[in-house]
Amino acid sequence: MSATGTPSPLNPAGMQGLDASFDGVFFVSYHASMSGAASTLSHTYNPKAIAGVQLNGVPAGESGINALVALGHGVPVLLITGDRTTAEEIEPFCPGIRSAVVKTSVSRFAADSMHPAQAREVIREAAHEAVQRLPHAAVPAIDLPATLTVRFRNADLAEMATWINGAVRDDELTVHLTDADPIRLYRSFVAVVVLTRTIAE
Image 1 (cartoon, rainbow, N blue to C red):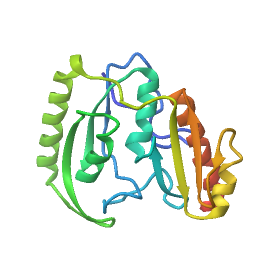
Image 2: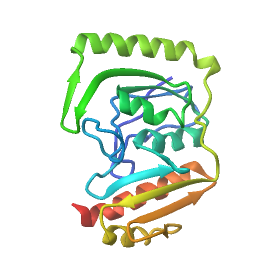
Image 3: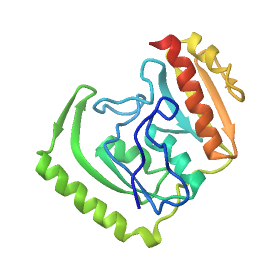
Image 4: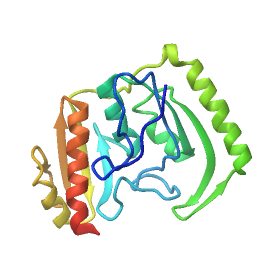
């Protein structure tokens, strides 16, 4: 078992390198979505462009979106670390996932964090339990075909998103993508992120 790789320009949230040879994946040091409850450093890929995302009608952060890649490769997501909101957001997509909650968010810009030594121990214990559960772990519970609904911060961004094949405009701020292939859906979403970044930054 191994964790995912580092972010790259075409894979900005760090799912690069995951394939079917992995036994499981850990989501380490994740943050909650822009549209959720107050959570430190909340964002969904690019907070300057994206105000919120839903996956099959359920609010999703980067963890839920990235779970599409794990599903596509048949790999279970075993662990997530972060604050309580982050742990709660992934539960609809990865029921029973082990979470290591190492901080309490006060706002988007403040958190009550555990001492690093204590946080390391919490993560170590959660990771150990996650690996022990591996024989019973299931791939993400995301119905296919799946739909990502993306709400942008302004209408220009939504218009630009429709330049990506398969992106359908729902209203002034919202676009959706639907695909039976979870990896192709993820890649289409990343293409939307990269394209809209050019006018949002």
